[in-house]
Image 1 (tube, rainbow, N blue to C red):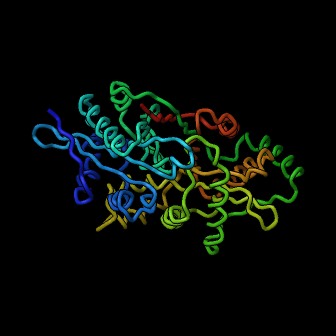
Image 2: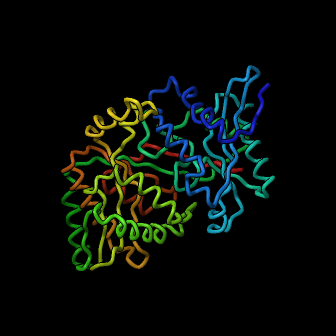
Image 3: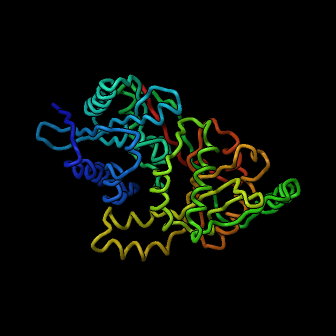
Length: 369
């Protein structure tokens, strides 16, 4: 007999530590820093200024934790998407359908008590964070800020009555100045001839506040019609940027400019999951030394954001930024770049990935009731 209990923040360590049990024999799962997970779920995260959550743990008859889930309502998402739907997130569970059903039902019940009658997920905690169950590609580690989940979670979701409602794709792109270059260079010359005022430059950390304001504006305009999109608030973006800026390699963060106006951006970041895998979730007392040592050995990237202002689309600016980023990535000694995530119906970006010799190597699935 399994039981489900609501928990509050004083029990957060039990919630955060449970995945270590579920993935203890899996070589591909990478724990993020416990301190960052705690901050993500705490009121220090500005996301919770417009959202709320309830955490649940599942226990067996011996009071051992066997699963967890969060029920989440993002009022900004509901307002922007004009859809009354809540999220489930942070789902982890032993391979037991009964336990999984109880967790999903607990999340549904809490959402209904808050007048939300539809649910989808996993969102950890939002569509701007880690999204989906891993659906294909279980034989390699995830890149930074991408999830890794057990293959049997798909069975648990299916047998709990949830349906797959969206797929998200990840492409692996080789970083090399290879036989793609003549084709890309030819395309670039056409772009430059048609748009002589467009220039590409790298991110300037010294002018961080100005650069950040441009990035927020472009992000919130470039994705406004995408499935699942909800704009970051200024507070959210600043908090995220504060965490990420120290991790950026500014030579592979590209900005497209029309004179003094920033019109496009490409943000690739080194895959710090390579480092986090060595740290086992701990920064202190010795993790900081591992961080400093292994960060110099990162060879992979994740291209996580690329967008152009609406009035500058279909001018080849994305390809222009991609080529410049590729050249700088080679100079930086990187070997591979993951482009993720891409919506299953975003054919244009899928074709761009294929043009860059990208291989579709991971799929993620969002489930709903």
